[in-house]
Length: 125
Length: 113
Image (cartoon, rainbow over all chains, first blue to last red; front, side, top):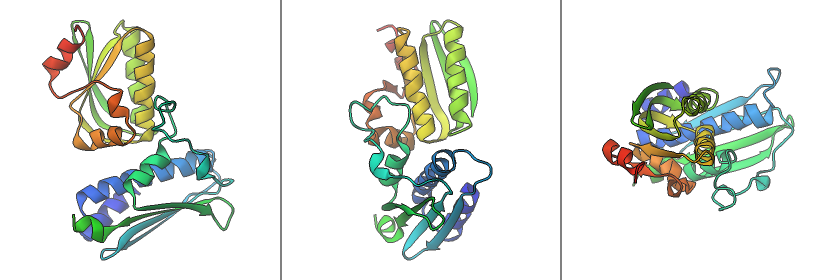
């Protein structure tokens, strides 16, 4: 997945900086889908769809076959009481490094996560 | 992730290289810290110069290792963070938890301060 993303970024001249942070968000999304969504089951799949429109945005959809996920249940890792916890930062990082992050119920019952990075805004910086 | 070990006085320096990410470098980092503690080192300096990526699992291990070392009365400090890893620690406010250095001699001296 990382190789595919890097090749897409390179071929469409998406900046290295943007590609790095999108790559981090995607790794967090895949780790969550495999570990928390599919509970590490080898029988369950994770579907990934990447859409790149160089003039608009890079969008990644990750779907697992788990039992669904409520992002409202994730505690704020920057809360002083949570600062030294050894887990619970994945969704926070996704929200930090992407422009849009939304969770919904997948058609097959798992979690559908959509990550979007606007490219125009990044390029004009 | 690859690790090179250097011992300077009572400080163990771990030169980290590669990725500290789920299922790979995070486990290796924990093992290196456990081995260091078993070898009698509770002052540990992690050199991040060669680290290209870290994810939330790696950050989690870093926090866990910091807590382990602190409970044993030791100190774990960070050296040569890249700008990206600094940013990753900054957004979660962990940059305020760790002692961070960009000079090895200063980092080593701080353990005896």
